[in-house]
Image (cartoon, rainbow, N blue to C red):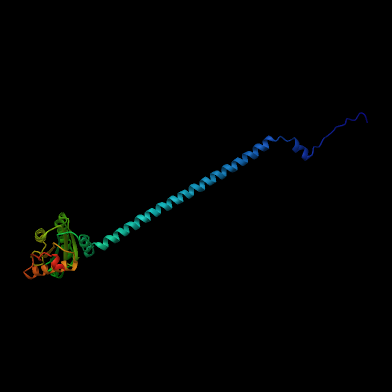
Length: 246
């Protein structure tokens, strides 16, 4: 027995192996994984915030675009409510508003201009030609009236009106004559070759409160006289005073 070599084998247990295992690699691994996870959370959060920021920016951009569009549409609606679509002139509504805005101005003159025999243009040459003539008259009127700080508007059909704040009776009549001559010089013609003309009634309020109905009736009466006396002429109503507006 003494000649047989003996060997000792030690079989460590699992718990003993864990006791002898170095701690540093595990701590490093856990720390690294923790930091990586935290970095992932930060990057993920940043990515989500960036995405949300882009969505908010896109929404704000679209909102501003819609606001601009709505504002433009609102401006167009307001413009159309106060202007004539054919001639681009102020319409009756804006003319009346202008009169009211100048209610305290004295003198205050008004012209009513009516194209002579305009129905013949539409009947013999068609409405397209008639519209072109009205547009031409509108541009002529603006060119003559606006330098005098006045407003030239389409009143309806072939009737045009002008508001001339601070223009006395003599000045208003001279401006009306220039307007009448300007249309005649445009050489717009009827189907038979005759020149298209206009008749104009003029009135001036020199004193007293503004009564729009009285003012417009006086100008209309002067226009009627111009028509009755042969057309293509200017006729003025007597200046209106406080006594006549009572």
